[in-house]
Length: 111
Image (cartoon, rainbow, N blue to C red; front, side):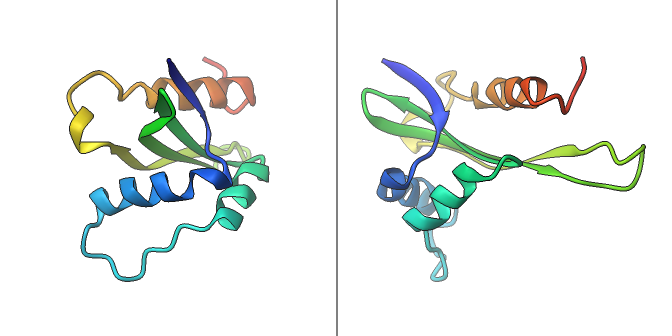
């Protein structure tokens, strides 16, 4: 079963494995359950995962940022788009449409 959802603290190990694919030589990388839960509780930050049969195969971070330009209208910043090496080029990059849905539902975009 395919599922796109917000990450939870219990996803720490699988997220770490994905991040390791993005930055394999990083010695400073640290994925904690506490940080993941803080992101989950924050109404302006989203850590999304693509899950298939309990295995996390993709992730993306969406941050809603405030600005003074254009009447203080916030904007979204998408970062750390990662798809598991075994699943690249297999149409699971649909996390981006999920970020659009979150922006739309939250009222950050009107189109």
